[in-house]
Amino acid sequence: MSAGSAATPRPRPAPRPVPRPAGALARAGAQARFETGILLRNGEQLLVALVLPVLALVGLTLAPFPDLGSGVARIDVVAPGTLALAVISTAFTGQAISTGFDRRYGVLRLLGVTPLGPRAMLAGKVLAVLAVEAVQVVVIAGVALALGWSPALAGLPAALVFGLLGTWAFVALALLLAGTLRAEAVLALANLVWVLLLALGGVLVPPETLPGGWSGLARLLPSGALADGLRAALGAGTVDLVALLVLLGWGGLASLAAARLFRWSD
Image 1 (cartoon, rainbow, N blue to C red):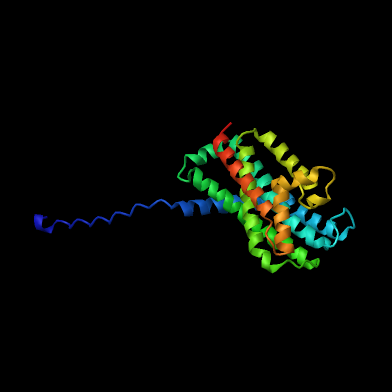
Image 2 (image 1 turned 90 degrees about the vertical axis):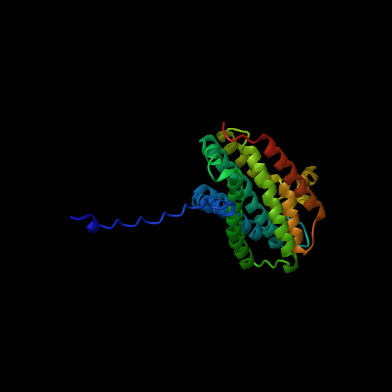
């Protein structure tokens, strides 16, 4: 075979473009979808986040006790308090327990050194909490409306602000708890705090109806401030400035403490 009849070399394929890493928003969104799926598939979390608040809403609305104050329909007191309880259940109890066990098993430490990064991971947790809270609001508000609730539509923007501030404060408290204690202690303490806030935190029962000196103390707790703010917004369409300042104070202090004391691994 002559040199002129040699086979023509095949053209090399064009190099494939190097994939670009996902942006911070995309990473946070992916983590949020993952966290939301975990929260919604957790039977214990659904019990605390949806079943118990709905049972409390129906029971306290239909029962003649305890005393919820005079001059206001029971549903107008109980419905905003149940929404506050839903925020506490998801933003505090659920996040504290899940983050505590993620920390124990080394998940936080490993995710912190991946392309996800600590900030995107935190953003994903917050977005997941907000997604679950949206489901809670739809369910609880639907049941409350069926029971005769008529919220003040003019107070919806203020209620949204209080909901976001309450979420911030309780997520910060959850991270503070989960980042400083062992997972078993977080599990026990988070559930205990949930029960105590439910009974004495001014959530379902207004602070002014609590016995003794608990009334003033409940107003200074983030649970009482969140519930009072929602009751004022959804009941009268007004803004409770004291409750707003209390939530801002708790959110700021808890965030600073969590940023300083949080440990990524045991």
